[in-house]
Image (cartoon, rainbow, N blue to C red; front, side, top):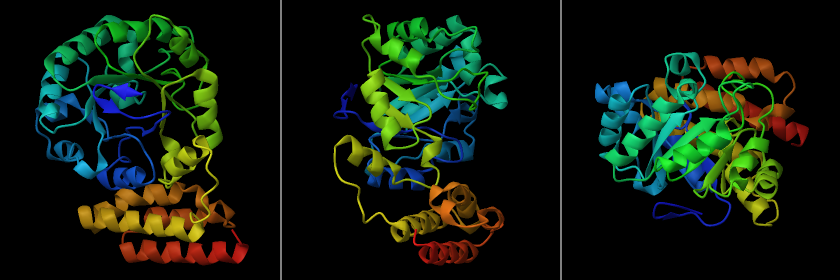
Length: 330
């Protein structure tokens, strides 16, 4: 698979752009464990234009993590074009257009998935951004606004005609938000369209290696993108990659190693930002990590993780979890 001049090989696995999740520390861990491409947290075109410091910081890229895409969202052509030109100065490998974010503060204002209600404007944005920059432009969207407007088959072809060099489809409508099951049937229909020839990236409910293999084998996508299943689990990319490549399960990735990785993530973020904000960037991952499912009454431990304000506090909780899991033989 190829986007622009970037070669990914067969069946690559990407990390989805997620606000307050895909910071540079987390991206580097995902890269280490096999993510073929990462995306920054998605950023507002208006905030980019206004040079909001926190927004510009989200677009910082380290050469060690490449290839990396910067994803932007906005609701009009002018701001998206201006923002894309600024983003290009940060030297991303691709610029991704967010036409799929369903949350009210984005879609409710006509950006992200809100553009699924104004396809001519979406296409106008895509066309003008493609013309305005020199890096590959890609896009991410959903099946449609709701179940009565499943427009993705035609929309995918239209976006391709605007010059988009790859398309990611999340297998839900905007109205579904993140509920129910992702429907990959229409993603497969897009791939079968003989007029559609750019790389297709499937997204939605890739929770482990078996789901990843099914996405490739059953629906024929060129790549997959993993989102929420990465929380507290950057090693999921190695688990998927090994499974796709027919390699045996890596027994070195045991509970001790995984807790070591989570502690490393905490240290990376504390050193990169400061203790308080570094903890904020990390504790969501810790509380969501699937490795703690074997702990009885983990709810109280999870609350303690989410309330922790000191790195030492979080490390102490993680070490107690390590001991509890060792006692249960997990």
